[in-house]
Image 1 (tube, helix red, strand yellow):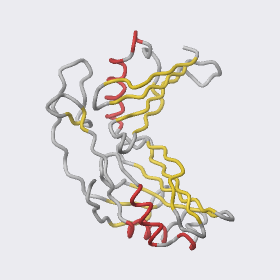
Image 2 (cartoon, rainbow, N blue to C red):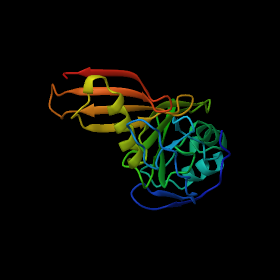
Image 3 (cartoon, rainbow, N blue to C red):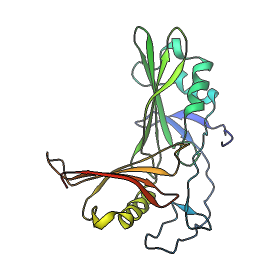
Length: 227
């Protein structure tokens, strides 16, 4: 697990909370010998397999501060702005490469028994965003992960994953199908990606969903409808 690194948090932009971090230049990756050639966005080990390096860059103090200064509508309810809740959220959060997001926002709301906290993060080099949603018991303070939708992946890496998936796809089943979304999985499933291909928005259009293990360079599962 990565050691947490403190970062300065300030608010700006449409996502409101801006976290600036200095990132070192990654080393040039080794190139595998088979057809799908990666860009510098994906590093490879000596065996030609992908090296995915997620991590947990935030500590509880940073999450608590983000709650305090939240400018999302309604902010974060005071009842869940506690160090214990912030620590639990920080323990559950992962980013794709272990670096802080370039921009993020925290918001929350409460019902009679349970509160909900949303943490959204984006990267400057990615089109998608990461969304983590947590449920917090008002009486107990217990924090549970409700859902996650992780799509903050470097755009160049998305192209690499598409090329790798196309090269592994059976009988060119994905040929000509546009890639619409790619989602990454945190540990213990790091290195696994969910790719969605769609022919169009019309009812009855071809839809294909692929689970790719980029580390082992294999397709874990593939399903299609109307193709």
